[in-house]
Image (cartoon, rainbow, N blue to C red; front, side):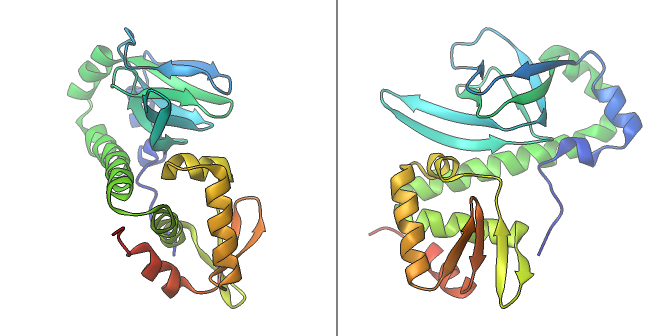
Length: 220
């Protein structure tokens, strides 16, 4: 059930192309909670995640809406109208936007890989926005688990094992809800026999069809 990882730029390039693309980039270490970009940021940089996890989110008054999590190989900029924050210790490769633009003019072979990565990020953002607008929290959770099952699920005994490098708080941020709500819904799905929680971020999906059907229910 594993497909190609369209969101990892570094894995998509051969060594020579990668080295040429990253000329002028520098490594930056981020501590958990450190902001890399914000709506008022003056910095005009492009970054590629080398390790860790970066959260891209919008904030309005006391509400936050997570657009995506960037992991190894993800690419983004510091000058969007979103907050960009490390949610765990991370390392990024930072480069000047103008310099990268000039590099790409002489390195056209890297452009398709960058477009694929940005397309995957944009697609994820659009799914999250659609879910927030049209699905209740249970539907959003079911759709998230179903999507991850397609990407990462593997047969395990009579079920499908899903291992996520995300805790309940991370999932709640993606779904625009609270950790308590996600935990409560997972417990309900467990009681209904849809899944069982094996460990932190590890699930056995016993009824993938019911999970998918639940993910397709829109809020009334």
